[in-house]
Image 1 (tube, protein in one colour):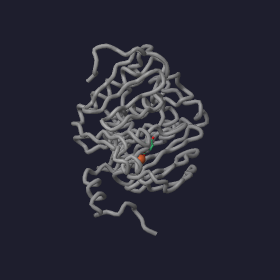
Image 2: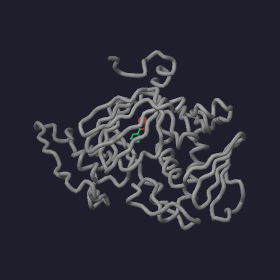
Image 3: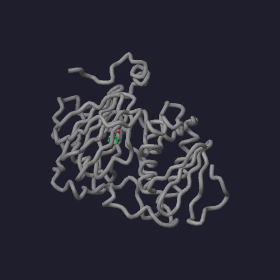
Length: 321
Ligand code: PHB
Ligand code: FE
């Protein structure tokens, strides 16, 4: 997948994927396609790339910025330039290519590994990591291949994802020093001792070492609770292919909500602790969290949903007022 045998003068390999080419220098990721080229600050690019890789291309669209991104078709993935940008579309400069998921997954993983230097952790908040810039300087395999939390039933269930503790390498984050750590009291009826499980979600989240990374902590059929801790700016602009519910568990996040296809601004939503919002199926959004906060993202993973929304069989909002 690399185009040349050796690294460039900055120490980084160049990657080709179909007609796309990705190059990095000290500051930028350069993306080249048959009808154009684009550049992104490399720290922003790596933060977006890390999430796209770790999430298996997520639900719907992952925009790295207003130009570059991926569309998940659950088996194949479109890599695009300018496709969800009204101006690129109008000028005929947009370009899309489809890949089998394992192929683009492997290419993105190789690029993430080669372009991430030792000091930089793409999942960490900018205040808790070193710089991504400069010539090639080591690697950070540990940071980019973190275990992805995907509970089968619920965190804390026997044989399922464990809770977090100092001993397991998850200290309480600096912004969550006031979060109580007590486990809940569980008083099951006699005979049901092995079947009742509870855990302290606030304590669990206070010990997250990553930002903007929803992880599955409970599953009931297609209903997935995917809480996450947020600080600074969501590194991707997520284009929905279904409705997503947000429950702001602590602090505050500002959301910029745009039309999914054109990028036209639709709303600015300020969510404070306790607020609940449904993000429509036809928007894209980016969050801004002034201090580390806790957000519950509630996903419906039912595979039939994208088709129902795309064909208009379901309205893009869960309630009409
Ligand atoms: C989202 O696009 O819905 C999203 C992604 C990552 C987060 C939170 C929300 O951490
Ligand atoms: Fe989203």
